[in-house]
Length: 275
Image 1 (cartoon, one colour):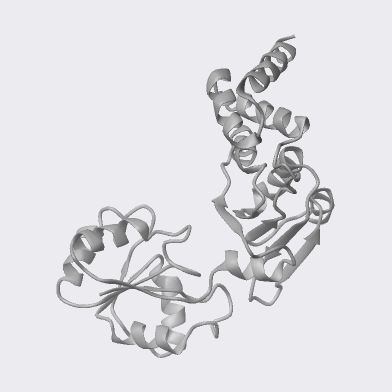
Image 2 (cartoon, one colour; image 1 turned 30 degrees about the vertical axis):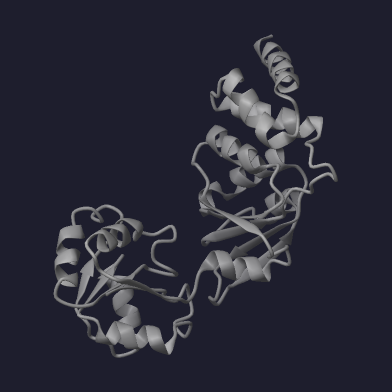
């Protein structure tokens, strides 16, 4: 059995009795950083053998871990939260299943869900985006692709990119409700709520890891995008290098506009950009 064991995202008390039992009983723990996991194991008096399994060795270690699974149970843990969710894990899960092993999740902490339920923003339908691209043009293109969706958006961001991403969010999505969670379950936990512009003013010196929860698009009664929404999507897509023909076809499928009308807007926009 390969166990996917969720570990605390801050407070060491946020781990289940079942997770501790599994970590005690398995033959091997594959840990993203053995030094980080050792702190958790030492806190609970667990001495299970460990091996490192992280982003840069996740392929080379597959053979070793699959060999261990052939002899007994293995637990996979990340530094914090649920393994496989923005942490190494998918490749190992896929390889274990292909080799005929069983995979069992041991649920627990996950910062996207923790931030969502504390955000004060709708939780009934949401879309998890993970980390946005590093470059602004690519970020804006990614955001434009989901700008029309009515779902609450959840994404992660690093301190040094937070303010730039907030600006891209504002420019691409317009004025929306936002919650910014940082240092969840830790001593300096903060869940800040407001608008994009207010967030840019508030986080002048960002520190910690950030989870953003953004209100979904307010869909018109007929589900059709406004002209401004279409123009925003066109601008972002052209910046990202998408061709007018492909862009018109894609937007026609989600905006409620006709392909010819969108193509005409694209040509007008493109002409102005070249002047």
